[in-house]
Length: 410
Image (cartoon, rainbow, N blue to C red; front, side, top):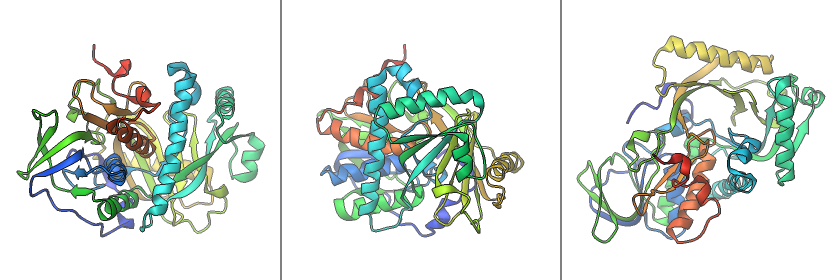
């Protein structure tokens, strides 16, 4: 596996002894084979198995061992691309449908976590989307109007209201209700284990795919490095941020790098109103949240270039900048990083995920949650792929499908 992150990660310390799964040792027949055991693979595997499909997850390394470790666990229905900009890009009907699919996905994630026996750190929350400058206020108010007009639960806060609830003042903010937070590492492990225990989900780690062949009946054969084969009617690639492994003819996404810090637990988080998720209009943006044990997670300042920073000095420079922003917002907090890392993430050219059937290979699908809303996109993808595989229509299929014109090679 290519290195997707560098630095000292936090989440695995919240689950020091996760369940492990055996490498594939014998030939298996399945309705659906999922390549990848990260967030997208885990949710999709659980969801399909729960809906009666014989499903297998094949992970080349360890479940939740890739991008899931670097996930910061903010679950928001708003996207890196504002609703107003998405309306300009794809039209109001489709843009609103996509945003509503993201809101519905958070509700579905809440229902799933409520059914899991293990703690996942899931909690409903609201977000404070602040204007970074006075120049951003007109655009932010247009966004608020678009969200409110289309039925989303939002408020607009003027500077005085922001300052009344927080130790900082900004020119304006949208408060979005219906968001959430989660411990991504605990969640992936919990949902995979529950899928295996209750719904017969087959899970195999250390099972790299060395070849993917079609058979005479229109099915698929996945050959693994362990020497065992998987015969499946459908194959889903949920391979995270490794676009060179795509089997279709998609235009590659842009690979960027993001940085994150986690502080020690704060003695007093009362200045942080209702533990809101906080992010800003500036691009690249800064974002922050609290963990269950009152640590501050802060991240952002994304940079073009997909390779994580191996230099400790380079990482420390960005970590210091992030800590400075935390201190600026909450002067009473101890903002020194206890953990710091940077990680690769991908963005598609139209700011939407890649979810759907390969236009050139029947019954091969991708569930790639590219962008800042990866966990939400994973849930959107699980529901969409279930519908496609079971022959049901889904209104967002053409919006995020791989056949949309912007993703095809000339």
